[in-house]
Length: 112
Length: 112
Image (cartoon, rainbow over all chains, first blue to last red):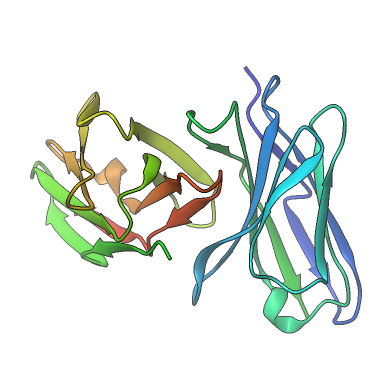
């Protein structure tokens, strides 16, 4: 059974650019969440989508946005990149509230 | 606001020891609690999921307990092996929504 797939695995971008990360959840999972992981802040929640609707949003600036498609695949976009956006971005999917989350391998974003 | 704390931050033990990792949370209104392991530079691997109505879950050499009223969970690892070396994270899922709130993790090193 395929797990959560995130692409690309690694990205290097320049300050001011924008980036789009992709996540394909486990087949049948309709809930998709995104997290940012940095050494200083640990794992922080970005947003959660369920059936194409954003249900929750974390405390991040408006430069961070996301969406979910009808096939449950999700993308997140970061515009006007800053050095502090360098992090491991993790996507997770779940059947729903009473079920656990399965995480992908992440996208390592480096902003130079 | 839910806060999750993990103690200790780091732990080094000789191979074969039994060990306990601790996780505490401030708000007992949770849906469930999930333990993960993370190898360096990788995504999260789910170990155990405990629903709010459950007291413990077991998988192989791992046993996780939950005491919701006191806001505590423990992860017991029996007969530790060098392959258990990783960072262990606990995360709670609140009644208010689907997002996970993570502790800072315990970095475990098992020496041969």
